[in-house]
Amino acid sequence: MMRIQPKPLNSYPVWLRPFFWNQKRKYGQVLLPGLIWGRVPWLFAAVALMYGVLDRRRSPLEPALRTLVTVRVSQINQCRFCIDINSWMLARRSGSEDKVQAVADWRNSDLFSEEEKTVLEYTEAMTFTGTSVTDDLVERLRTWFDEDAIIELTGLVAFQNLSSKFNAALDIPAQGFCQTPLGKQESPDNDHQSDPEDEHPEV
Image (tube, rainbow, N blue to C red; front, side, top):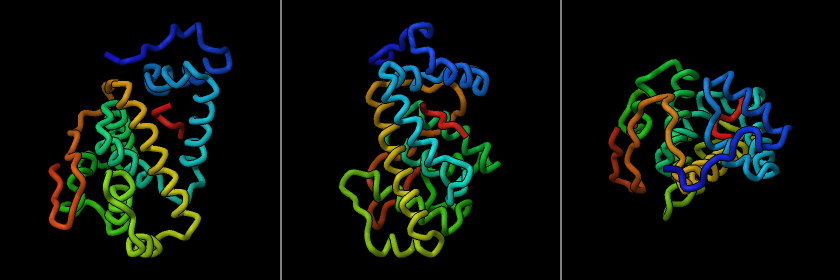
């Protein structure tokens, strides 16, 4: 059971309700994280605005690549809701169910390009406790991204950590979008091999 419950829909500010109605139209249900963030309306607005910028159509990062990042961060932080909806979104954006299933084992998969693997390595370096980003890793990112794009990638990883840690801490459950494995949670080392797993869907 979630540690904090949503309010009745009619108790949220009028200006927030269109967000919830749009979610119901798009996803068939109102998303639980939005209802929880919405208990503090201006916090909801700030979070939604930030991700709207990160996930805009003119982002220098391709949509499937952005969603790949959100899935991996979600797995590491063991956010059930985030894994569920972001995996569903990745399947739609990449056109590959197999790719969704392989995210946690990306090092051993030939489904990912070198660009995607470098981005996933950067994502893990930012997310796992006790790891850090190296100069070499950032230099390898420059093969595909200019400095502004690297800033956006870094912002996306940081934001998804905020979102997934928020949802995991409050035990927000999956809502039945996609069935995927959680994936290994431990920090990778040199010999580590992981076992297989428009509007922001988490707001």
